[in-house]
Amino acid sequence: STSLSRKLTKLLRHSAKQRGLHIRPDGFVQLSEVLSLPEFRGLGIEQVRQIVAADNKQRYSLNEDHSDGVLIRANQGHSIQSLDEEAMFSKIVGQDQLPACVVHGTYMSSWPSIKEQGLLRMKRTHVHMAKGLPRENGVISGMRGSCEVVIHIDIRAAMAAGIEFYESANGVILSSEVPPRFFISAVHRKTGTDLLASAAGSAATGQVG
Image (cartoon, one colour):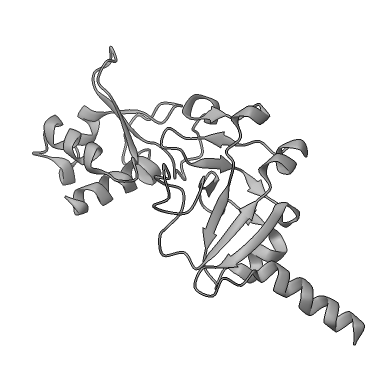
């Protein structure tokens, strides 16, 4: 159910350690430990398989071939700080691995600070980016469908400047930060206005006056 999926996401991304679960550097925990918690008691592995398979953003990975038993993890979105990003994600190391498009979705309320400070990871371990807009061909996760502003990022220039990028198992592009100088555009989804161009135009007008 949606309620169980939300609880599972919260546990695997944020509260596994404080709930006493043994979480590996790659983010996996033993499913038996998860199912021993009160909110998941009575849940069986088949129901967990259904939750994992039904998740349209592919938030989870299930490993049923491990010697320690069945393991489960959230693919990204963690705030747990002790995880090893090299073990969890694929590091993007070459230009040939770069997606054609990288975008970050946000809201108008957040845009003023993002415009000045860039994209920061805040309480999460990474900034999340998508390879395209929600529901575009092959785009599963990385951006909320309700986002009001889409920031297009020059990932090639950012990588050339030394910023590291990773890709999660469900295709989300991750980084510790993206400074605003690597923003190509910031398009308001409803109006189509490029907020970056508008800001630059306003600044130029102000300087002339």
